[in-house]
Length: 114
Length: 112
Image (cartoon, rainbow over all chains, first blue to last red; front, top):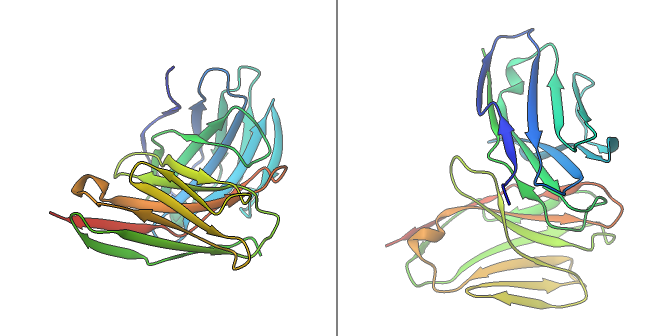
């Protein structure tokens, strides 16, 4: 089985712009979670989607949003980018929703905001 | 209550030695405690996980020890190898919680 894929792998944007990141989960997995990883804050949970429904959201401003499509692929969007949004954005898929089970991570999208 | 505290931040171990990383949690609803390993440029990968109904789980050179009463769990890497040099994250989640809380991570360096 192919692993979790994320596109693009690297992205450079300027402040005020918006960005859309994409994640394709492992075939058959219906749960997709997004995390922000920074040296200072570690891995921070952004949101989880299951069957196109957002099940939980972390403590991030409304500029961060996401969605999931009927084929389980997911996108996250960050509007009005700030310098502090520079981070590695990781997507993880799981066959079950609700936590308490193994997550498979993609390689991440490295976002740099100038 | 949602935090998972991990220590140490960094660890240097000689080849063949034992690496020990500790984590503590507050939320007694947590019922799944995984450890993830991350190499530079890669996403985290599940190493080993435990549920609170057992006190220890071993997979090869990796062992999780779990102390429910103390709300602590730890990862032991026996016979540490240079290839084990990576960042390790403990985590916790609970059924129906729809999120996983990660510790801050431990950078392990195994000296040859």
